[in-house]
Length: 335
Image (cartoon, rainbow, N blue to C red; front, side):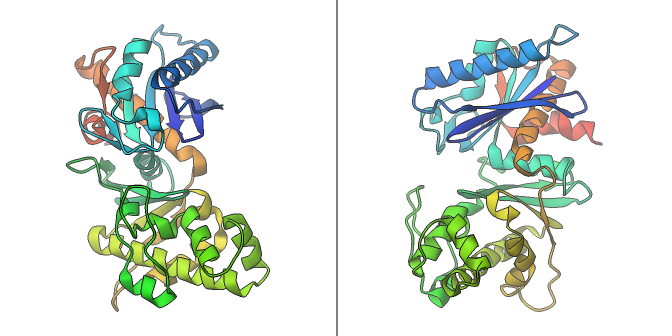
């Protein structure tokens, strides 16, 4: 069995997958994000529960893959996570020691992209760029079935690129402070939180849900906010096209489920491109909110394969470099 664990700021989802990555079981618990030892104990308890529910016929316990928010350095140290107790911790190594089994670790947005590129909406495309439009903005890049993490595991942190000055000037929007410490980051405008911020800046009241209801009711402020949001997101996507030239964008997160947004994105992106450029496809995620936990399980499967083939990873050791892990595991299984 392969266990995928998707860690969020308020909840943790654990899913059990078969060797063919068919979903067998899943459940959620609250995130114990303030105390690290409590967090590890809570997670270990859920892994034990998965072992109890799905005992392995071979006697070998399920391999664990974790997706979490934040940057994961090559040595496995987590930084810039919105789960406070995880920062400066080697989560996979510590949990692996507690469980006496290998644990694989990856960024949640990169796990989403991996899942959709290899098994989901992007599986028939060579160059897949996955983006999550949720409370933040992030994603991942898969080329020829291989996840690209970059030299410092930063590839896919689209949300912290600066928003184009032309967009801000056109709509009279200020530079917003970002939680990362910078000003004017793209995710402060094009995430779900950012859309609500734009709506309120134009005189609307409430959050993104209130905006959507107002838009569908024909409200002028909601329509103005929608236009500004699309302009901002189109600018971000155009930048990714010019840098990476993907075959397809695959979108996840709450805003990807708003049909008005997805339908308008090609035209909004084209406004920021020069004439004659062919746009990629724009598509919603096949697995929806489950893509992250599935991608985590895929990391676990790749790690299990690596252990089996080389015996190079001990029971309490982790592999946090997703690119290295997939080169020796899942990536090779697909070719």
